[in-house]
Image (cartoon, rainbow, N blue to C red; front, side, top):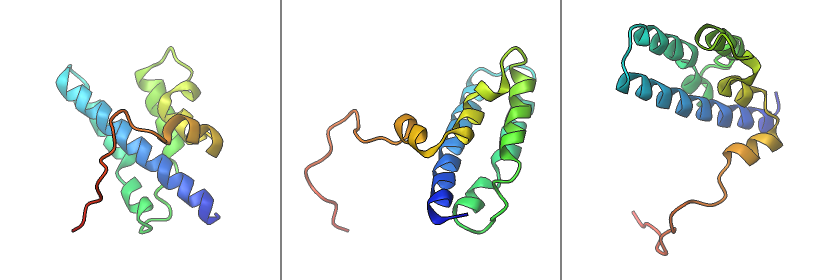
Length: 117
């Protein structure tokens, strides 16, 4: 794997972690029977991604796509798993990922000062 390919996977891993944490938070707000199982599935799929991101687990990415496909089939059986957001993020090429997930502007003004620690 080249350095740019690894960097893209790290960015995707970060986006997946962000989205799974948001989904977990939403599940806790609207608690229903079975929510704990869904939370367990999401954490089980993503728990090795931080180690992959910091270079301590080169295999942390292995199997993530297939597990998200299984998750989508289980929780959205009427939807094509390839169209599930987690799977789409993994399948995107760099150009599409850049358009969808890399911010170039922010919805608030940036401060004019630089933090000096």
